[in-house]
Structure formats: structure tokens, C-alpha cells
Length: 301
Ligand code: GRG
Image (cartoon, rainbow, N blue to C red; front, side, top):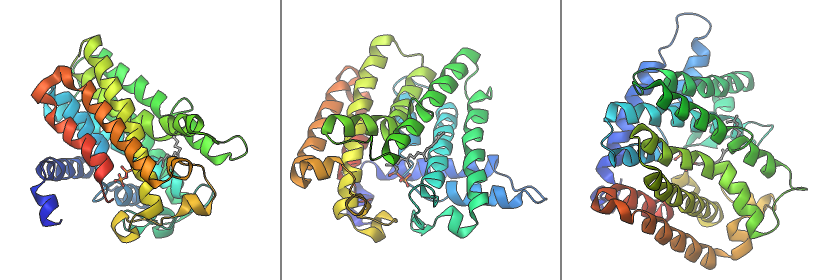
């Protein structure tokens, strides 16, 4: 970590969440003493010790607004990180993006093999719902059902998997800003939106509070994706930890290819200003969410 990063108001919350999520993964991913050991080792390899843990920190920061105990918000954060890890494993497969580097290390199908990678992704997806269904996540079964249903919608055909399908079909794919925004709202935005909403569901927020947080998440999701596109275009591969310049190589329409870097940067900043406006009703209590929003577009990885 650079000296500047160490002084950021996010340094302590990010390192705390990384440690907590790793501890929880270690607890739920005990390696069995039989031939399934390879599957669980692959799940651990994908899920532990890397990544920004942006989605879990969003769950926790949103839940903090409503005084939700950390033990509960961390479990919801763990569930969404399982879905995220699942999506990265499958996204990297030869039949999808065919990538060999992720989070600075060989992708799961390279480090293990393709069949193990498919199973590890599947098992992480299933694990997310196991975690949400357990009473430790919330004592009220209705809250657990709401979290579970919303996450399955955000991950499935009406969310991330649907967005991925749009991305895989260039013939039917995006050509203008509206189409790119729709694709990204599904592919990346739905899971980010769930993360922010999960804190509100756990904390039984009012419908007005949930509406404000939805507005925040919507702008944040788009801004986060613009930053991702900008990193693909001009980021440093060693810092980002994966192969870059793929959008241009594949001729994909993105916010950056459509707007150019300067306008895309300004658009991301405008979206973050909008996101922060939505936090006004929460006052100073929303400082962590505000810092996370700013980090999402200023990041170098
Ligand atoms: C869930 C049923 C189901 C299917 C998944 C493979 C797939 C279908 C979807 C791919 C979705 C995908 C990989 C979107 C990319 C999102 C994105 C910008 C990832 C990078 O997120 P960061 O920057 O990564 O938070 P780290 O490594 O920091 O966690």
C-alpha cells in the first residue's frame, strides 16, 4: 500500500473487511478429506486473499446506517462475494473471456483445470444461498427470504447472467449509450445494487430510505463500470492484476469507446456527485458510503 493509500479514510475499513471476509471463507470452506478436496481448494483459491471486497464493504456500510450487528452484515457480504467469485471464475473460462490472469494470479481453470473451475463456480453460487438461508444471517426468516430472492434475481437471467448474455452477443449487442448502460446495469450494476439494498433489508429500513439507497446504488454502479472501462483502456496491468485492452481488441462498445476518455471521466464524476446527493437524508452517518463512492471512480485497480 502506498503512503497516500494508507492515510485514506478507507484504509482501515477495507483492511478490516478483507480480514473478516477471509476468516469467514476459511470457516465455511473447510477442505474435506476425500476427492472433493480439489473442488474446495479451487473455491478457496478463487475466493480468498484477493480482490477489493467492494460488495461486502457496501453491504456493511449500508447496514451500519441502521445499526445492524456486523456479524449479520458480514454474512450477507460473504454471500455476495461468493456470487462475485463465482462470476469471475466463469467469466474467465475459455468459453467466455478466456483469461489466464485474475487478481494477479493464474485463473482457476489454469491453476486447476476447466472441469474443476466450472464446479468451483457452481459451488460458490450455491454456497451464497446456503449462507443467506442460515439463521445467523438474520433471525427473521422473512428477511432471509427477501435477501435470497433478491440476490437470485440480481445474479440470474434478469441480472448478471442476462447482462453477460447481452455482452456475448455482439450482433444483438450495444451500439449506443443507452444499450451499454442497460447491459452494464444488469451485468455489474445488479449485484452492486443488491449489496447496498441488503444493508437496508437487514436493517428494516423505511421505503423512503430504501429509495434513497437505490438511487445511490444505481449511480454508483454505472460510475464503477465507467472506471472499469477506463482501467481496461489505460490502466496498468500489473496493478489491476489482469489482462487489459480487451475491449478495444474485441471491438466492444463501452462507455470509453463511445464517449472518449475525458468525457467518460467527467460522466463518472457526475454520477458520483449524484450518488452522494442520494445520501443526504443519512447525513454524517453515510460518510463511509460517500468515501466508497469516491474510491470507486478514483481507483487504480
Ligand atoms: C451468476 C448464474 C450466474 C452467471 C454468471 C460469468 C457471468 C454469468 C457473468 C460475468 C459477470 C462479470 C464477471 C462482470 C464483471 C464485473 C466486474 C467489473 C468485475 C470486477 O470487479 P472488481 O473490480 O473485482 O470488484 P475484485 O477483483 O476487486 O473483486
